[in-house]
Length: 129
Image (cartoon, rainbow, N blue to C red; front, top):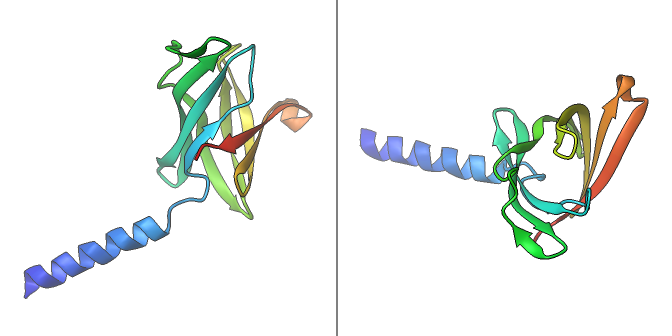
C-alpha cells in the first residue's frame, strides 16, 4: 500500500511538472547576426529559463560553430505577462548584456542592454515547430 501511494505521489508530481512547463520552453530561431543564425533550445534552469545554442546556420546551410552548446540566454526569470529578465550573451563580440525577453505566442523578443537599459540591441526570434 505504501508503495502504491508513493508511486501515485510521484506520478502526480511529474504530471504537475509537465503541466507547469514554462511557455518560453522550446526551440527558437534567432535573427541573423553577422550573417549567421542559430536554433536556441530554451529549457528550465532552476527557477529561470536558459537558452543553449543547439544548431547553427550560415549562407551555406548548417555548420558546426564553435559556439554550439554555449549558453546564450542566461537565467531569464519570469516576471509575469510573458516578460522575463536576466542576461544575454552575444557571440559576435563575446559580451554579456542585461537581458529582457517578451513572449507573444510563437514570437520571442529579446533585448540586450547596457548603460542601465539606455542602449539596447534587439532581436525577434520565432519558434521552431
